[in-house]
Structures are given as structure tokens and as C-alpha cells.
Image (cartoon, rainbow, N blue to C red; front, side, top):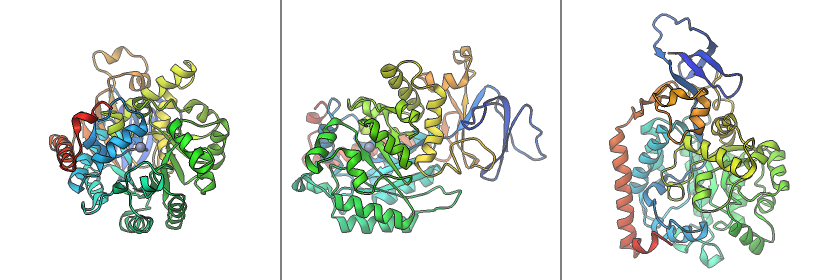
Amino acid sequence: MIIENVYIAPVVGPEIPSGYIRIEGDRIAEVGSGPAQPNPGETRIDGTGCLATPGLINTHHHLYQWASQGLAQDATLFEWLVASYQVWAAMDAEVVKGAAAAGLGYLALSGCTLSSDHHYVFPQGRGDLFAAEIEAARELGIRFHPARGSMDRGQSQGGLPPDVVVEDRDTVLAATSEAIDAYHDPSFSSKLRIAVAPCSPFSVTAELMTDAAELARAKGVRLHTHLAETLDEDEHCVEAFGVRPVDYMEKLGWLGPDVWFAHTVHLSDADIDKFAATGTGAAHCPSSNGRLGAGIARVSEMLRRGANVGLGVDGNASSELTTLSGEMRQALLFQRAAHGPTALTARQALEMATMGGARNLGRAGELGSLEAGKLADIALWRVDGAFASAVEDPVCQLVFATRQPPLARLLVGGESVVENDELKTVDQDVSGRAGAEAHRRLMRLAREQGFSVAKEVHT
Ligand SMILES: [Zn+2]
């Protein structure tokens, strides 16, 4: 297959105003400038009027939250969590499957070719929730790095979640180990990798954090958790552990090149330097941080000091219908609003959404840029529409515009997942309806357990 006559923003290396990308099997064979010399029998895609970027990479999500959007709209993180835990306690595998089908489809339509997911609520007797989301990703055909999450520190132990949604440590470690053995594919072309992800310092014991790190390292998989999201968490850590969040995680052996943290909004200079020195990554989720009033992560300072930052849409319950392409804009505007117009460029935002994400997920050798030898995960954005064609620079148009340019193609390993803003591997209407049905089902199950929706919309 060859994509011709296309503006190429490869992220690594110079941009090519008119060039071609040759794909052989699931890899990029060649990226070149000028007209292509097609081989006999090669499928030719005319990229005239399009911008080619690497597929976007989402490094923080909770797909099940598609089913609990719109609740506790005016709450802080802790208030929102306390309201949401009651709803999440009612979820089952059917809810997760429908939510993941809709959530992953929505991501693909915003240019995402690889998504992580952080699933940490496993109510007992509700079916195989982890298998349900993996099945949805397989059907859609995008790359998926689900993290087996967990909570073992309920209210009776000084944690935030009610005891009904936490598991005991042995159960968590056994289930996490089984998930890795059953699903983790470490190969170059892998479409499925597992990570280990206890939920947060305020819902997990120090013992589980330590054991989880040991398990992940023994199995050769990556580690993920939420960190330094709000000032409430800062206070909680100082009160409960005598140190701030990054120092706490350092004590538990949780800094390193195999770790990426979600949010990291409240970091000191010393914290940022620790990230840079240890190769610890961050998943910046600006819309979620804005929605919950958590603050603005010091992204430009992190990049300046050499720390890796990728992007994440975060669960839809705290970001609502956020697109991954839109998070580039949100990240850029937050940094500029806080630190001036040179704080973050459109190219830096695109790099966070691609290479930054690939580094967070341990895929920098295979993904994140358009280079010969890497996997053919490519987004082709149509930038020649009647309104759009007045913009000189296609990367500016992609990152600055509120309205995402049409997605002409989304290739995952050379296979079309999206064509002309339409999912090709699954029925888009069916996926959308599955998400709506998952929401209705979850709310019904939650009401049966005594949850009052009317009371919780505005908390
Ligand atoms: Zn999260």
C-alpha cells in the first residue's frame, strides 16, 4: 500500500509538504518526499489535501466510565469519587463490554490507534470485566494496553472507597498475575499488552503498591497509577504517610522507566527532576483536570526539564465526551493561559500525543512516529475543507481547531479501522447504542442497590 501526495508530519524528523508513505505488511517501509514510484500491484491511496500523522496514543482511561457520564458535575475529585463508587459497585461484564465498545470506537474516530485502560473496580460475582474490555478492543482492531487495576484500602482502613468496591491483596495479586499470563503479548507487532495498576495512594495500601511493583517487574510489564492529581491527595499523603505523593511512591520503589503516572498536576521542581532522572512518565489529562478543578499540570516545565509527558482523555465520567485529538488543543491552551504563548507549541502537543504516549507505554521502538521500520499506525486528516483550507499550516489546523478535521483514514498496522469518519471494522451505530445501553443498564443496577441519580447529578 502507498499513500501519495500527502503532507507528512512524522514527529521525528523534518515535515514533508508533499510526499508518500509506503506500507509493507504491518510496517512502514519507506517515507519519502515528492512523487512516489508505485510498485506493480500496490494499492494507491491519494492523500491530496490530507495531513498524515502517527496514530494518536491514549495513555490514561477508564473505559467503564462511559456508562456513568454526567454525574456529580460540580464536584471535587474526592466528592465525585465518593458519588461514583456507589454506581460503579453495580457494574457487570455486560456494562463493561458496551462501555468499552463505545469508548474505544469514540477514541478511534478521534485518531487513536493505541489506548491504555485502567480498570480498577471489580465487584464480586459480576463476570469477567477485564476479558469484556479486551474483547471490545479485539473486535474494533486497535492496539490495547489494559492495566489490571485494584483497590485494597477501603474506608475501614482509612481509604476513600467504601469497602464494598475493594478487594483483598491476595485476590488482586493472583488476578493480576493471571491476566498477564493469559493476555500479555510482548512481541514487536503486539496489539495487546497488560500493565499492573493499583488505583491511587488513597485507595491502595503500601503493601499492595510494593507487591504490585514486584509482580510487574518479575513479569516484565509496566506499572501505572494515579498520582498528585489534587491538593486533597497531597494533604491525605502528608497526613497518612508523612510525605507528599512523589516522595511516597519513591519510597515504595515506584519511580523508574517502567512507570507512568496519570495526572501529576501538583509537582515541585524536585519532583519533576526525579521524573526526568528516573525516566518516569506522566499522562497529562487536561480536560479531566479542568472538569474536576484539579489544577493545571506543569507540562511545559516537565518537558523543559526532560521528563516524558503523554496525553490521556481519562475516564468519560470525569472528562465527558472528550476526544484525544482535542486533548492536544486543551493541553496547549492550558499551558499558554498559565505561562504565555510560547509555553507549548502545536508540534510539542502533537509529539506528546504520539511519541510521548509511545514512551509511556513502552512502545517507542515500534510506534509514535512515521519512520521506516515502525508499525503502520497512521492517521490521515482531511485538511482541505471549505473553511479549513484558509489555514496555512495543517498541523496548526489539527491542534488549534475546536472542530477536529475529518479523519479520512485511520490505519492500525496497515489495516483500515476508520474511513471518512466511519468505523470500518465494527458497525458504528451498534457500538454507539451499546454504550447507551451500558449506561441505562448500569443506572438501573445502581438504583436497585439504592443509588439516587437525581440527587447525584449536581453534587
Ligand atoms: Zn483516572
